[in-house]
Every structure is written in structure tokens, then in C-alpha cells.
Length: 208
Image (cartoon, rainbow, N blue to C red; front, side, top):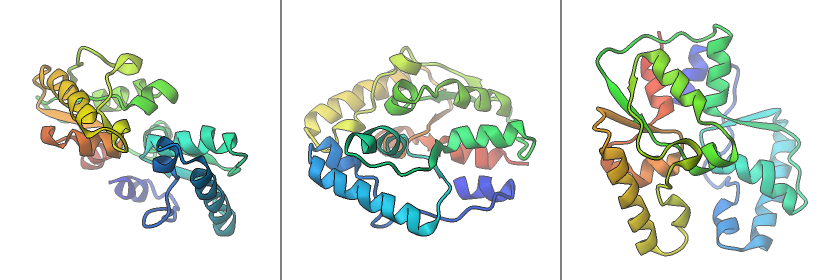
């Protein structure tokens, strides 16, 4: 979906990541800081080898790792890294993308923990969804107060993760929206019983 958006805006972009290329977040969350540092150093080397100038990703965790935690282990990748949402909003504001309207559809946006709490990105997705014509139905806890999907505990206790995700599912279902959306691949996977979509999919479907 992100590729569709970038192609529509005629953005010259090359694929970077996937496969064995990882920011090292699982190692960080597991407390393996030596392993995490090695991953960070590998990423730094790869970025320099490929001549990367800016990184666009739909994963909030990757952004936090590279922007904050790499520095804690003495690694500086030296490039800007932004979420797909931020970049898409730039394209819309510059007139490089136009979105068609939907009618009679309601949607609930689930705020990913890192995106809302650490990166302070919560209004941008709502602005875009409203511009597409969705009626936004907010759960009881949103923005910086939003409850976690449970994804952060994937490397820990499964029972705890399931309890957290079940609680969040109930909160989201209470909105009785026709669609549910987030902006984090982990949230989408953990909350898949709601047929959760990534916001890039919603934007991609609305492109004129």
C-alpha cells in the first residue's frame, strides 16, 4: 500500500529493509544490548553503503530504535527517518496526492503506543481519515492515553499479552465502527480479529 502511495505521487524511492534487515528491536526488548548494538552497527554500515538519504517506514518501533536507542549504544545512522503517515501528509499538503471521499462509513483509529506516546503523532491520521470522509468514532482511550494492543509483550509472557490485547479489542469494538485502522504492523497483526487495516491501505484505496 505504501508503494502505491509513493508511485502515485511520483516519488523516486528505492526499497530498503525486509528480509534479514532488522532494526534490532526484538533484541532491545529482550535486554540483549550487545546483540542490539551489533544490529545497529550493521544498519549504520548498510545505510552508508547504499547512500540512503531518508528512510520512510510504516513501523513506529523502527523509528524509535533508530532515532533514540541507537544513540544509547553509540550509533548514529546520520539520516532522517519518518513514518509513512508524516510523509503522506507532506505529499497531500504539497498537492501531490488527492483523495476521493467515502460516504456513510465510520472508522475507529487505534493509536499505536510508540507513534502516539513517543513520536507525538496522533492528529495526522485523524486529519487524513476525516479528509477521506470517514466519520471518526473514538474509543474510550485515545492518543497518548490509548491502551496498548499487547504487541510490546511479544517477546515476553503470552498470557499477559493476550489479556492486554483482549481488553483493547473490547474497547475498540464498543465504538461499533464499520472499519478499524491503525498505523503499526504489530498492532494490525495483534488485533487481526477486528480485520484491522493499516492506514496506508485506507489511503491507497482513496487515491484519485
